[in-house]
Image 1: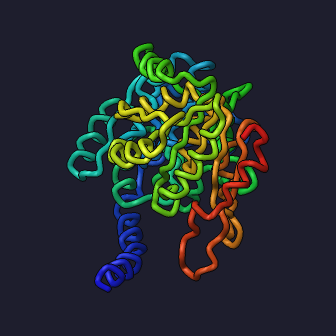
Image 2: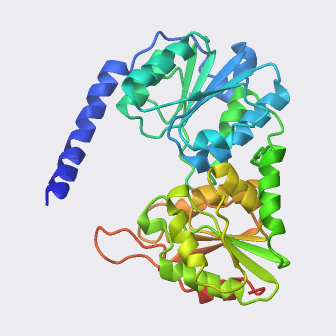
Length: 374
Protein backbone atom coordinates (compact mmCIF):
# COMPACT_ATOMS: atom_id res chain seq x y z
CA UNK A 1 0.00 0.00 0.00
CA UNK A 2 2.82 2.40 0.95
CA UNK A 3 4.63 1.57 -2.29
CA UNK A 4 1.53 2.33 -4.32
CA UNK A 5 1.00 5.65 -2.52
CA UNK A 6 4.64 6.60 -3.08
CA UNK A 7 4.30 5.80 -6.80
CA UNK A 8 1.18 7.95 -7.01
CA UNK A 9 2.97 10.80 -5.24
CA UNK A 10 5.98 10.54 -7.57
CA UNK A 11 3.71 10.51 -10.62
CA UNK A 12 1.98 13.61 -9.30
CA UNK A 13 5.22 15.46 -8.56
CA UNK A 14 7.14 14.51 -11.72
CA UNK A 15 5.62 17.07 -14.12
CA UNK A 16 6.00 19.78 -11.45
CA UNK A 17 9.70 18.97 -10.96
CA UNK A 18 10.27 18.94 -14.72
CA UNK A 19 8.50 22.28 -15.15
CA UNK A 20 10.58 23.83 -12.36
CA UNK A 21 13.78 22.38 -13.82
CA UNK A 22 12.94 23.71 -17.26
CA UNK A 23 12.27 27.16 -15.80
CA UNK A 24 15.72 27.18 -14.16
CA UNK A 25 17.92 25.49 -16.80
CA UNK A 26 16.22 26.02 -20.15
CA UNK A 27 18.35 29.00 -21.14
CA UNK A 28 21.39 29.65 -23.29
CA UNK A 29 23.25 32.46 -25.02
CA UNK A 30 21.83 32.00 -28.49
CA UNK A 31 24.04 31.44 -31.51
CA UNK A 32 22.95 33.13 -34.74
CA UNK A 33 22.20 30.13 -36.95
CA UNK A 34 20.56 30.12 -40.36
CA UNK A 35 17.24 28.31 -39.86
CA UNK A 36 17.51 26.96 -43.40
CA UNK A 37 20.50 24.83 -42.37
CA UNK A 38 18.22 21.88 -41.63
CA UNK A 39 17.29 21.85 -45.31
CA UNK A 40 20.69 22.85 -46.67
CA UNK A 41 22.33 19.95 -44.82
CA UNK A 42 25.70 21.62 -44.33
CA UNK A 43 26.01 22.35 -40.60
CA UNK A 44 29.61 21.17 -40.20
CA UNK A 45 30.85 23.29 -43.11
CA UNK A 46 28.74 26.40 -42.49
CA UNK A 47 29.50 26.61 -38.76
CA UNK A 48 33.11 25.40 -39.03
CA UNK A 49 32.48 22.54 -36.60
CA UNK A 50 35.74 21.11 -35.24
CA UNK A 51 34.39 19.10 -32.31
CA UNK A 52 31.14 17.24 -31.54
CA UNK A 53 29.92 15.98 -28.16
CA UNK A 54 27.35 13.16 -28.13
CA UNK A 55 25.26 12.77 -24.97
CA UNK A 56 24.45 9.13 -24.18
CA UNK A 57 24.06 9.50 -20.42
CA UNK A 58 20.99 7.24 -20.37
CA UNK A 59 23.19 4.14 -20.06
CA UNK A 60 21.21 2.24 -22.71
CA UNK A 61 23.35 -0.38 -24.41
CA UNK A 62 21.21 -0.78 -27.54
CA UNK A 63 21.11 2.96 -28.18
CA UNK A 64 24.88 3.15 -27.91
CA UNK A 65 25.28 0.32 -30.43
CA UNK A 66 23.11 2.19 -32.92
CA UNK A 67 25.03 5.40 -32.23
CA UNK A 68 28.23 3.76 -33.51
CA UNK A 69 27.08 4.39 -37.07
CA UNK A 70 27.28 8.14 -36.44
CA UNK A 71 30.82 8.15 -35.09
CA UNK A 72 32.09 6.16 -38.08
CA UNK A 73 30.24 8.13 -40.74
CA UNK A 74 31.40 11.52 -39.40
CA UNK A 75 35.03 10.42 -39.16
CA UNK A 76 34.97 8.94 -42.67
CA UNK A 77 34.15 12.34 -44.17
CA UNK A 78 35.71 14.60 -41.52
CA UNK A 79 38.59 12.71 -39.87
CA UNK A 80 39.86 15.90 -38.23
CA UNK A 81 36.70 16.41 -36.14
CA UNK A 82 37.06 15.61 -32.45
CA UNK A 83 34.32 13.28 -31.24
CA UNK A 84 33.53 13.04 -27.55
CA UNK A 85 30.87 10.78 -26.02
CA UNK A 86 29.28 11.10 -22.60
CA UNK A 87 28.45 7.53 -21.56
CA UNK A 88 27.14 5.89 -18.41
CA UNK A 89 27.76 2.47 -16.94
CA UNK A 90 28.00 -0.63 -19.11
CA UNK A 91 27.09 1.30 -22.25
CA UNK A 92 30.53 2.91 -22.11
CA UNK A 93 32.15 -0.51 -22.55
CA UNK A 94 30.46 -0.81 -25.94
CA UNK A 95 32.65 1.98 -27.32
CA UNK A 96 35.85 1.62 -25.28
CA UNK A 97 37.77 0.31 -28.33
CA UNK A 98 35.99 2.40 -30.95
CA UNK A 99 38.64 4.01 -33.22
CA UNK A 100 36.26 6.80 -34.30
CA UNK A 101 35.91 8.26 -30.79
CA UNK A 102 38.52 10.58 -29.34
CA UNK A 103 37.25 10.99 -25.76
CA UNK A 104 34.82 9.01 -23.58
CA UNK A 105 33.45 10.84 -20.53
CA UNK A 106 32.00 8.73 -17.70
CA UNK A 107 28.70 10.21 -16.51
CA UNK A 108 27.47 9.52 -12.98
CA UNK A 109 24.10 10.57 -11.57
CA UNK A 110 25.59 12.17 -8.49
CA UNK A 111 24.90 15.90 -8.80
CA UNK A 112 28.38 16.89 -7.67
CA UNK A 113 30.10 14.44 -10.05
CA UNK A 114 27.89 15.44 -12.98
CA UNK A 115 28.62 19.11 -12.28
CA UNK A 116 32.36 18.39 -12.12
CA UNK A 117 32.21 16.51 -15.44
CA UNK A 118 30.27 19.34 -17.08
CA UNK A 119 32.97 21.73 -15.91
CA UNK A 120 35.62 19.51 -17.49
CA UNK A 121 33.69 19.41 -20.75
CA UNK A 122 33.16 23.18 -20.68
CA UNK A 123 36.93 23.54 -20.69
CA UNK A 124 37.10 21.51 -23.93
CA UNK A 125 35.01 24.16 -25.78
CA UNK A 126 32.91 21.83 -27.93
CA UNK A 127 31.44 23.38 -31.06
CA UNK A 128 28.38 21.12 -31.21
CA UNK A 129 26.50 19.12 -28.57
CA UNK A 130 23.93 16.56 -29.75
CA UNK A 131 21.34 15.16 -27.33
CA UNK A 132 18.93 12.39 -28.34
CA UNK A 133 16.78 12.28 -25.19
CA UNK A 134 13.03 12.32 -25.78
CA UNK A 135 12.13 13.60 -22.33
CA UNK A 136 14.84 15.43 -20.41
CA UNK A 137 15.12 14.98 -16.67
CA UNK A 138 16.14 17.94 -14.54
CA UNK A 139 19.70 16.70 -14.02
CA UNK A 140 20.08 16.30 -17.79
CA UNK A 141 18.82 19.83 -18.47
CA UNK A 142 21.34 21.13 -15.95
CA UNK A 143 24.17 19.07 -17.46
CA UNK A 144 23.55 20.35 -20.99
CA UNK A 145 23.39 23.92 -19.72
CA UNK A 146 26.68 23.58 -17.83
CA UNK A 147 28.59 21.96 -20.72
CA UNK A 148 28.46 25.35 -22.50
CA UNK A 149 28.82 23.99 -26.04
CA UNK A 150 28.72 26.62 -28.77
CA UNK A 151 25.71 24.97 -30.44
CA UNK A 152 23.20 22.58 -28.83
CA UNK A 153 21.13 20.27 -31.02
CA UNK A 154 18.10 18.33 -29.78
CA UNK A 155 15.30 16.13 -31.12
CA UNK A 156 11.71 17.36 -30.89
CA UNK A 157 12.60 20.33 -28.64
CA UNK A 158 10.61 23.03 -30.45
CA UNK A 159 9.75 25.12 -27.39
CA UNK A 160 13.15 24.94 -25.71
CA UNK A 161 15.64 27.79 -25.35
CA UNK A 162 18.45 25.39 -24.45
CA UNK A 163 18.71 24.14 -28.03
CA UNK A 164 19.95 26.23 -30.94
CA UNK A 165 18.91 23.58 -33.46
CA UNK A 166 15.79 21.42 -33.18
CA UNK A 167 15.10 18.42 -35.40
CA UNK A 168 11.41 17.61 -35.59
CA UNK A 169 11.28 13.85 -36.09
CA UNK A 170 8.13 11.77 -35.54
CA UNK A 171 8.65 8.88 -37.97
CA UNK A 172 6.86 6.00 -36.23
CA UNK A 173 6.87 3.83 -39.34
CA UNK A 174 10.65 3.74 -39.71
CA UNK A 175 13.48 2.11 -37.77
CA UNK A 176 15.20 4.28 -35.16
CA UNK A 177 18.46 4.28 -37.14
CA UNK A 178 16.76 6.54 -39.69
CA UNK A 179 16.58 9.27 -37.02
CA UNK A 180 20.35 9.04 -36.66
CA UNK A 181 20.69 9.14 -40.42
CA UNK A 182 18.62 12.33 -40.53
CA UNK A 183 20.98 14.01 -38.05
CA UNK A 184 23.94 12.99 -40.19
CA UNK A 185 22.27 14.54 -43.23
CA UNK A 186 21.87 17.84 -41.39
CA UNK A 187 25.56 17.75 -40.48
CA UNK A 188 26.37 17.39 -44.16
CA UNK A 189 27.43 13.72 -44.25
CA UNK A 190 27.13 12.10 -47.68
CA UNK A 191 26.62 8.47 -48.80
CA UNK A 192 25.51 7.38 -45.33
CA UNK A 193 25.92 3.76 -44.23
CA UNK A 194 23.41 2.94 -41.47
CA UNK A 195 25.10 -0.27 -40.29
CA UNK A 196 26.46 -0.52 -36.73
CA UNK A 197 29.91 -1.68 -35.74
CA UNK A 198 31.60 -3.05 -32.64
CA UNK A 199 35.31 -3.16 -31.94
CA UNK A 200 37.03 -5.76 -29.77
CA UNK A 201 40.69 -6.19 -28.84
CA UNK A 202 42.51 -9.35 -29.88
CA UNK A 203 42.61 -10.52 -26.27
CA UNK A 204 38.85 -10.06 -25.99
CA UNK A 205 38.31 -12.02 -29.18
CA UNK A 206 40.61 -14.78 -27.92
CA UNK A 207 38.45 -15.17 -24.83
CA UNK A 208 35.45 -16.02 -26.97
CA UNK A 209 37.53 -18.23 -29.23
CA UNK A 210 38.85 -20.26 -26.29
CA UNK A 211 35.32 -20.91 -25.03
CA UNK A 212 34.21 -21.96 -28.52
CA UNK A 213 37.07 -24.45 -28.65
CA UNK A 214 35.64 -26.24 -25.59
CA UNK A 215 32.48 -27.02 -27.58
CA UNK A 216 32.73 -30.10 -29.80
CA UNK A 217 29.42 -29.62 -31.64
CA UNK A 218 29.38 -28.06 -35.11
CA UNK A 219 26.79 -25.39 -34.33
CA UNK A 220 26.24 -23.15 -31.31
CA UNK A 221 22.96 -21.54 -30.24
CA UNK A 222 23.39 -18.73 -27.71
CA UNK A 223 20.36 -17.88 -25.58
CA UNK A 224 20.13 -14.58 -23.74
CA UNK A 225 17.21 -14.94 -21.28
CA UNK A 226 17.44 -11.49 -19.71
CA UNK A 227 15.77 -8.17 -20.51
CA UNK A 228 15.34 -4.80 -18.83
CA UNK A 229 12.57 -6.00 -16.49
CA UNK A 230 10.95 -9.21 -15.27
CA UNK A 231 8.23 -8.76 -17.89
CA UNK A 232 10.92 -8.83 -20.58
CA UNK A 233 12.92 -11.75 -19.17
CA UNK A 234 12.50 -15.46 -19.92
CA UNK A 235 11.46 -17.38 -16.81
CA UNK A 236 13.11 -20.66 -15.84
CA UNK A 237 10.41 -22.76 -17.49
CA UNK A 238 10.81 -20.95 -20.82
CA UNK A 239 14.61 -21.16 -20.63
CA UNK A 240 14.39 -24.94 -20.16
CA UNK A 241 11.96 -25.23 -23.07
CA UNK A 242 14.36 -23.36 -25.33
CA UNK A 243 17.37 -25.41 -24.25
CA UNK A 244 15.47 -28.66 -24.82
CA UNK A 245 14.39 -27.49 -28.26
CA UNK A 246 17.83 -26.53 -29.54
CA UNK A 247 19.95 -29.18 -27.80
CA UNK A 248 18.01 -32.11 -29.21
CA UNK A 249 20.08 -31.95 -32.40
CA UNK A 250 23.34 -33.88 -32.03
CA UNK A 251 25.32 -31.31 -34.01
CA UNK A 252 24.10 -28.33 -31.95
CA UNK A 253 25.30 -27.01 -28.60
CA UNK A 254 23.58 -24.46 -26.40
CA UNK A 255 25.05 -21.86 -24.06
CA UNK A 256 23.56 -18.93 -22.18
CA UNK A 257 24.82 -15.37 -21.76
CA UNK A 258 23.95 -13.42 -18.66
CA UNK A 259 24.79 -10.38 -16.49
CA UNK A 260 27.20 -11.17 -13.62
CA UNK A 261 24.44 -11.17 -10.97
CA UNK A 262 22.67 -14.05 -12.78
CA UNK A 263 25.70 -16.35 -12.88
CA UNK A 264 24.44 -18.79 -10.24
CA UNK A 265 20.99 -19.04 -11.81
CA UNK A 266 22.43 -19.83 -15.25
CA UNK A 267 24.91 -22.34 -13.85
CA UNK A 268 22.11 -24.14 -11.98
CA UNK A 269 19.94 -24.39 -15.10
CA UNK A 270 22.85 -25.46 -17.31
CA UNK A 271 23.74 -28.32 -14.94
CA UNK A 272 20.22 -29.72 -15.28
CA UNK A 273 21.18 -30.93 -18.76
CA UNK A 274 23.63 -33.78 -19.23
CA UNK A 275 24.78 -33.08 -22.78
CA UNK A 276 25.17 -30.37 -25.42
CA UNK A 277 24.67 -27.55 -22.89
CA UNK A 278 27.78 -25.55 -21.97
CA UNK A 279 28.13 -23.14 -19.08
CA UNK A 280 30.51 -20.22 -19.59
CA UNK A 281 31.59 -19.08 -16.15
CA UNK A 282 33.84 -16.30 -17.49
CA UNK A 283 31.19 -13.73 -18.42
CA UNK A 284 32.10 -10.68 -16.37
CA UNK A 285 31.38 -7.80 -18.74
CA UNK A 286 29.34 -6.87 -21.80
CA UNK A 287 32.44 -7.36 -23.96
CA UNK A 288 32.68 -10.95 -22.67
CA UNK A 289 29.09 -11.42 -23.81
CA UNK A 290 29.88 -9.92 -27.22
CA UNK A 291 32.82 -12.28 -27.75
CA UNK A 292 30.53 -15.24 -27.00
CA UNK A 293 27.88 -13.96 -29.40
CA UNK A 294 30.52 -13.52 -32.09
CA UNK A 295 30.91 -17.31 -32.27
CA UNK A 296 27.17 -18.04 -32.29
CA UNK A 297 25.41 -19.59 -35.27
CA UNK A 298 22.07 -18.44 -33.86
CA UNK A 299 21.13 -16.01 -31.08
CA UNK A 300 17.81 -16.14 -29.21
CA UNK A 301 16.89 -13.11 -27.11
CA UNK A 302 13.99 -11.07 -25.70
CA UNK A 303 16.23 -8.02 -25.18
CA UNK A 304 16.71 -5.29 -27.80
CA UNK A 305 20.25 -4.44 -26.66
CA UNK A 306 21.36 -7.99 -27.55
CA UNK A 307 19.33 -7.71 -30.77
CA UNK A 308 21.31 -4.62 -31.80
CA UNK A 309 24.61 -6.25 -30.81
CA UNK A 310 23.69 -9.32 -32.86
CA UNK A 311 22.83 -7.13 -35.86
CA UNK A 312 26.19 -5.37 -35.51
CA UNK A 313 27.83 -8.81 -35.58
CA UNK A 314 25.69 -9.77 -38.62
CA UNK A 315 24.22 -12.80 -36.84
CA UNK A 316 21.13 -14.88 -37.45
CA UNK A 317 18.69 -14.38 -34.58
CA UNK A 318 15.28 -15.19 -33.22
CA UNK A 319 14.12 -12.08 -31.37
CA UNK A 320 11.09 -12.32 -29.11
CA UNK A 321 9.11 -9.09 -28.80
CA UNK A 322 5.96 -8.21 -26.92
CA UNK A 323 3.15 -7.44 -29.33
CA UNK A 324 2.38 -3.82 -30.19
CA UNK A 325 -1.32 -4.69 -30.28
CA UNK A 326 -3.34 -2.33 -28.12
CA UNK A 327 -0.32 -0.20 -27.09
CA UNK A 328 -0.74 2.51 -29.70
CA UNK A 329 2.99 2.22 -30.39
CA UNK A 330 5.15 0.65 -33.09
CA UNK A 331 7.96 -0.51 -30.85
CA UNK A 332 8.67 -3.76 -32.70
CA UNK A 333 9.42 -1.78 -35.86
CA UNK A 334 11.08 1.36 -34.50
CA UNK A 335 13.28 -0.67 -32.11
CA UNK A 336 13.18 -3.83 -34.17
CA UNK A 337 16.18 -5.65 -35.65
CA UNK A 338 16.21 -3.90 -39.02
CA UNK A 339 17.97 -6.96 -40.46
CA UNK A 340 16.79 -9.69 -42.80
CA UNK A 341 18.79 -12.21 -40.79
CA UNK A 342 16.52 -11.78 -37.77
CA UNK A 343 13.15 -13.47 -37.27
CA UNK A 344 10.74 -11.78 -34.87
CA UNK A 345 8.36 -13.78 -32.69
CA UNK A 346 5.66 -12.05 -30.66
CA UNK A 347 4.36 -12.78 -27.18
CA UNK A 348 0.62 -12.52 -26.64
CA UNK A 349 -0.77 -9.26 -25.31
CA UNK A 350 -1.92 -9.13 -21.70
CA UNK A 351 -5.63 -8.43 -21.48
CA UNK A 352 -5.44 -7.42 -17.81
CA UNK A 353 -6.00 -3.71 -17.32
CA UNK A 354 -2.88 -1.80 -16.39
CA UNK A 355 -0.62 -4.85 -16.52
CA UNK A 356 2.44 -5.27 -18.71
CA UNK A 357 2.48 -8.09 -21.22
CA UNK A 358 4.78 -10.98 -20.33
CA UNK A 359 7.49 -11.87 -22.85
CA UNK A 360 7.09 -15.54 -21.87
CA UNK A 361 3.62 -15.67 -23.41
CA UNK A 362 4.73 -17.10 -26.74
CA UNK A 363 4.39 -20.63 -28.09
CA UNK A 364 7.71 -22.46 -28.31
CA UNK A 365 6.36 -24.22 -31.41
CA UNK A 366 6.42 -20.85 -33.17
CA UNK A 367 10.18 -21.28 -33.45
CA UNK A 368 9.65 -24.60 -35.24
CA UNK A 369 7.28 -22.86 -37.63
CA UNK A 370 9.64 -20.04 -38.58
CA UNK A 371 12.92 -21.98 -38.45
CA UNK A 372 12.91 -25.28 -40.28
CA UNK A 373 16.42 -26.12 -39.03
CA UNK A 374 15.12 -26.91 -35.55
